[in-house]
Image 1 (cartoon, rainbow, N blue to C red):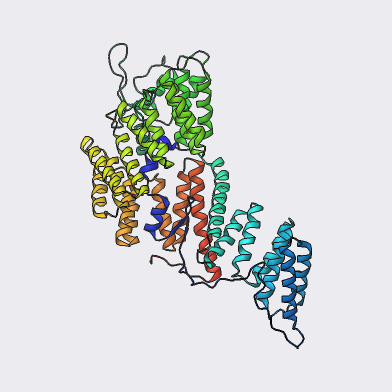
Image 2 (image 1 turned 90 degrees about the vertical axis):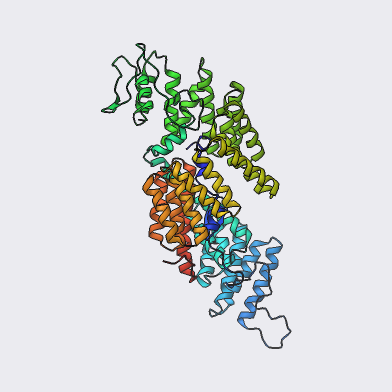
Length: 580
């Protein structure tokens, strides 16, 4: 889904850290790895080190012959010296001798020798030997963070991301989440696993349209769309009058717009369907139009089909149409600009911010009086936390389209985010004034109440936030995201997951296609250790995803929850929950 033209990217929710705090878990990085924080010192951590020779060594002179265990420790110490000097083959020989000498009852020591030998094999690039030794070390000591971390790295190199995540998760649990390096590795592996799963699933998904509410919100994000014209309230504009001076009727019979004639081209039929809010046949009709050898609608048919591909979550197909359109001569300015905006959004979605901003800059050069350019670039900049630049673009959008409410509310929210980042009380007051001014100008705009409510939550003004969310719901009862926010707020204030889930499940009733609602329900169910329900909702959210990036994030949540539960059970660590 093209994020720059999707208000839901902002109104869908608190960032993952905020949700983590509300739900009662820690969010590990932007991938959204849901873990809980163990109390410092609660779990005993193995202190063995590759080059630390202090463990179990007897440094006092003794007249007695050295035991086999002591001889093994001496061999390990020699190996550590060789290791430090980069003489890995000699180090391996010493560690091997230590393994042979050490009595079997000293399994902890033997695990250390295997782990150290694996480290030496790692330096020599002996991947199979690394894994064999680490498997032995962990079989002897399953609570061995250093060995688990090294095996996680080996699995990651081999692109066995699920196994890598299981090992690094165990490592994090045993370290009480106090080792920053392990947390970084866990975040990286989780994202790699999510991406690999999403790549496979996305290529085989069945494209489908989002909900009617989402479609309305999408189109309402443009003031100057040459195909999907909307008013400031997000309502489709009436059809143009026919040559006889009468407006074409707006009913659909058997999937076709009534009032059309056999002489109308496929694209003209598609235009009628757009005004009927009937979108299912648009790609087919545009394809038929583009197959005609001589059509005056080629440019707009490409733009319409590209837009519909975006909404179906078919980003590659959308890019083909938009790129082809932009290479053509004689394209109307408004059509080119709209295509550049949508292309920029798709490119940004693929994590290529620099190329995306080039698209927006090109659009600005094409028409610096088109407010859509500044609004959508501002929204993109807001999403990547370039807040001052976002505010400037929203200001320009407002100056060009003073009746476009969405730019006002997102400008106020950008001000709020900037104030929070700066920790400036004066800036927070300024942002609050901007929200109030927006409400005075647009008292019936639900998005203002929703984002203002989020801002109030950030400041701990929960009673005021609930009032704003309630007002937003009264204005737009079909907006499922509002109910998700109310549920999260309820959880934050009441700590009652059952009460919160009751509200959020209403969101699914209002809009069964609300991916965000399923994601949050899944997250809460993880913390209630209700894994069957959690997996159902994560999988449902994955099914509804419109982009590979969204799908990767959701796969990350799904696998993180599954693996954390499995590892905690294996290690005998109880995961705290919200209760029944």
